[in-house]
Amino acid sequence: MPYINIQLSTTLDDVQRDQLYEKTTSLMNKIMGKRREVTVVHIQESDPHLWAINAVKLTPEDPVGAYVDIKVTEGTNTPQEKAEMLNQTIKMLQDIVGAIQEACYVVIDDIPANSWGYNGKTQAVRAASKL
Image (tube, rainbow, N blue to C red; front, top):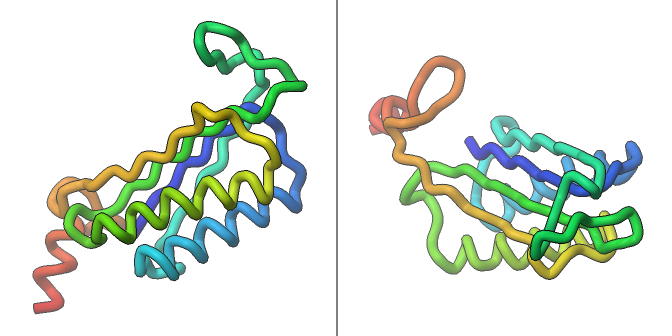
């Protein structure tokens, strides 16, 4: 049940948004083994001047600022899967958005199973019911 928040210092067109939704969901499924039907992708777009790197505001001419926050249940992915997801996420952004800042961060948050869930049940309750 991953939640992925993609923040960008640009405005996308509908095709780019749809590509990010599909590709992110596909990567989560293929690399991280997550079910597509409970994968949420949230894209936030903002003006470049709302981003700064080295205390310098970005301009529309600069490469895109990006930050991707991926939330998964703790213990459900290996370090190798996470490394591949980080790598493929950067490639995906470059392919869809274009040039991105060097200071583009992808964070994978491992959330304890008893600290989050969906549809009214924690992941810990879901795991226990499968036993």
